[in-house]
Length: 280
Ligand code: C2E
Ligand code: CA
Ligand code: CA
Ligand code: CA
Image (cartoon, rainbow, N blue to C red; front, side, top):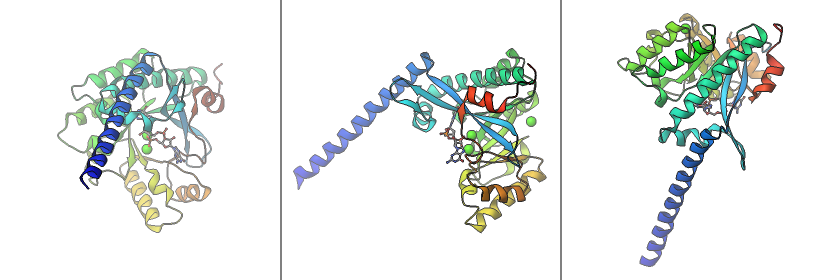
């Protein structure tokens, strides 16, 4: 009936309004969280192909919320991306990760490569974004090739985009570039040749099915073979079982990341477990 229809309409419009209010609240909270320094970085080690030595670490943001506890990035990064807040968050992540990397180096005398996630929206084609990265690395006297920037494939697809040039500048300076979630995005691989990519990170969805699905193995093998021909190293993301590890070792995957070896952890835990203090 008509009245029923209207009720439903009112119900939906009410729900949409609630959502909008909820979102505005979250945006305000994120802004405040930046001001109050409520974000923290966790580190997840990335191991050699035998799973023995932590060679790199991925910085993963968490929100240490005073009431709700630790909140994962999936709950606030997408919202921040819609509101320009990703820029401020990204700058904070960059500075904190560089500071941490400098500290790891100071403690051990060895480079622990630190990998930082970047939203495509953060990358400013004018070059300012790269300038700031280089300035921040210089400020901490970081050795070259300490930092890695992870970008998703779609960031690099367009050969005419000014972002390409900015990626080359990073490379020249000695900041490595990793392709995150490799395999789930666009299908053109031309950018791999065009750009000086250092690392491919094979998405967890492929690793996950390796033990049960022959075609997943074939795909992972093809990616590794291609990458090695292009002198690009490969990280397997989300390795959870010994079986996956064994298969990846057989395929000569260069690096392994996943719960089988270690979960993301607070900075101090990471230092205690993976940064030797030989220099002290
Ligand atoms: P991602 O870059 O693909 O990061 C890997 C995610 O997989 C992380 O989730 C990590 O905790 C999780 N993971 C690692 N090993 C395993 C495993 O063996 N099994 C399973 N099931 N998961 C595993 P997290 O920390 O919740 O991050 C989610 C996403 O949020 C990231 O996906 C990344 O896209 C984004 N993100 C995280 N930190 C930042 C940041 O600082 N800036 C930006 N722009 N995005 C970030
Ligand atoms: Ca990543
Ligand atoms: Ca490089
Ligand atoms: Ca990933």
